[in-house]
Length: 279
Image (tube, rainbow, N blue to C red; front, side):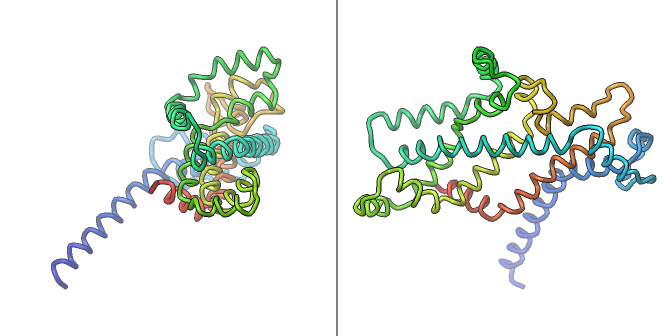
């Protein structure tokens, strides 16, 4: 084997080793969560480390997680809130991104600069204005309180705008010559060609709002409209920790739909990020 091939082999092994170590650190909390969901309380607080439980109580922990709280209701609330937010975000972000990417008008660069500035503002900084506005309109503790603050996504506008720029302008001009209006061009041309970017944005949006605890904890008090992350707090037991096993079982249940959705959209998600990252 030549020296060049040995160097390439060594580099490849080093890269795979680095990725393996990174993946281990990223997955370790999830593995530990599943391990705790299978253990009784006395094993959870033992000082010795072991992944597989000596006494298996996984069935009991998952039964408590599903029956002690309306977990199915929380999951359905999460699906409804996340799906509605994503649908409304598309209705706002797609036309905005199309205008910033394919149309020429005065102030376009200024508006895009405003989008970039909005990316720097943390959502927590807008919590008080959102709370006051929803209180004025009497929308607190409703589904609207969970949905309305997030229908405008600066990240979604930026991501889709970058992808729309990769679509040749000749296609847009040809569509206009054929008599299509701007809305028809967006719906019949841009949307089908942007499936990878839409999938990538969908994964980011759904994961962010499915796992969000900060805003639902402020805007919601009624258990019937709680999202999964807020509903899991019902298993808290700060004094004895007797519900830590069911708590971890509940956390595993609410994470499972996200993993399934990511696996289904994995290919388009990676394609969308790779395409927009090159622009």
